[in-house]
Amino acid sequence: MGRPEKSIVTENRALKKLATWLRDQRRRIGQPSYRQLAERAGCHPTRLQRAAAGTHVPPLSAVLAYAHSCDASPEEAKLLWKRARHEHTQLTRKGIGLVAPRLGLVRDFADLSAVLQVLYEKAGSPTLRTMEERAGGYGALPRSTAHRIVTRQTVPHSLKQFQAFLRACEVPAEEQSEWEAAWSRAWRHEKQDKLLDSEVFPSRWLAYGESNLRDFQASYPRSRDTDLIMRQLHQQESEMEETRSQYERKPDRVLQNLQRQTSTERHVRTPRRGHHVLRLPSVM
Image: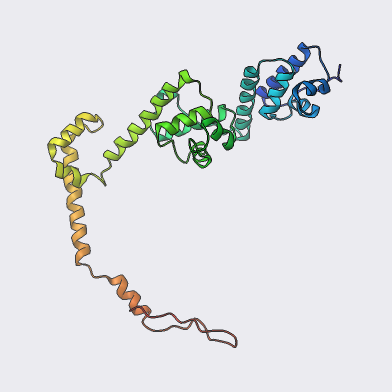
């Protein structure tokens, strides 16, 4: 029997639960020394001792090695480690919570990006290399793309890439359909917003005619007042035409001013010995 271990003191409640569980597994098999456990696990005794110390979140490989040496469930050990890692990430954020909707309420890219970041943190915040390996190897989910997704700079651009991200976060197969539905809603909302962008569609809808606009209104209930939209489109089209005609009549004064300023050579400063005169060529 080895020496008694120190008490677990940490703010991370999930980490304390993990360390307690590891010590209970060692106690269950007769409290062997860490040297004996290391012989079973094939690693250094200090690595296993630090895993159950509870001072910091240990590597997943150390937790699995500890569980293997005690003939414990690796699935339960991995689950406890993910929870400890997730709570550590929350504590690192210094009380600033991550606001994310429930998966069934995801509506746009902002919602989707938030739930993906939460999913990544609950998966234990794996390294980019680990995510690339879990996703299916090279090309399925590049590390640069995974980094931009977990930092909320972008969202997966294809369903295949989104499925690779789910595999990287170890989402069970029975839950992937709900995630894919959320991804589809976010992309549908994004495409709808592009169709309703007034800077793109005024001239296009005027060319298509009012009948097509009514078809669009029937397809997207967000556009309810079709007549009002048509009046706004006509007004914007007239304003664009007036602005275009003003620019056609306006001389290019910018180029004229530039030619006037640089038509003569200018000296930056009085040259001294060893200094050259900086001369600006005139614009032809």
